[in-house]
Length: 90
Image 1 (cartoon, rainbow, N blue to C red):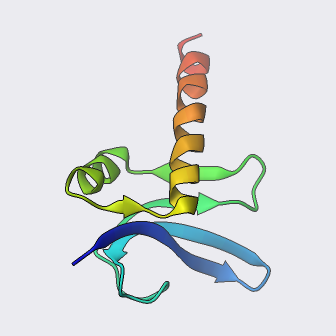
Image 2 (cartoon, one colour):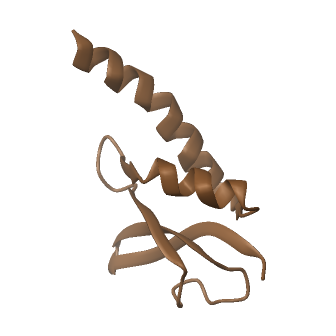
């Protein structure tokens, strides 16, 4: 079974948001999944990215491959995390 981290679409017409899920690559985009590991909402400003980093690290360690979009979301979340941590310490 090839596990991938990808987006599963939710929300309404013209107002989507996405769940970041770990799933078998053969499953449909919005089909069954193994675990929900986060939320990505590109319609909000700034974008809302909520990830369960421990679970994402677990899936990556056991061989899950992120999709291109999920890789981009992970990169953005990593970039935003130090800024949020610095602001909280002041």
